[in-house]
Length: 279
Image: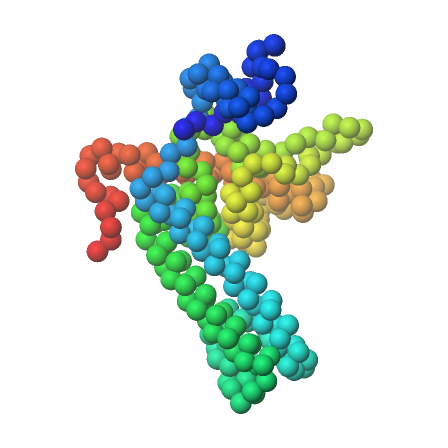
């Protein structure tokens, strides 16, 4: 399975039939794949695929918990408008226990539904935490160099690993930056003064992970804070500086991924069993 860029599907002048349909697109993709033998191949199997499956499942559970929490907050407000629920408090067991105790003697239908949703929040939180515990040893074995990047935690590294599907398929760090959506797009119209605009393309999951790392470093956990201060002193806004920091972090992540993949490959070739399940 290879990835065929859309610009290659047009073919030579007159090589594509007019119109657009599934058979025409399929033929154009096949011709482009046969004509270009060096198209990138995404490889995701073994432990790396397990990481992606776990991350995707965790993301679905977090989305479901968010919907349950929104409905629960509305019902709690209906029951008692003066009741204060801390921000992000519905993911903490102590807050859920306190709310359940307050609603224990309330026999109204809304209170019963609220208790059901409290139990659902507790169960979803338990599953989400269990998935993170399961991800930790996998990510530590697959990407120790990536985890060494300041601000990159287990969840961020897992998102990057699963979505990258092999850093070796990118010819350079610039190509990887285009894939992650961190390559800046210059503003050419009028007096731009070297400004760049937001790149809305690329893989938004990896872009989100890089943004999380950038925000963490901006708070003093790594070299990003000094880089941001340098850019803002030069006249950049904080938003522009964060975009440039994400671009720099994309290069660091690409280098770390290449190093980790080389280590894993060398371990597999030597038969040391570096990726054997932990005891």
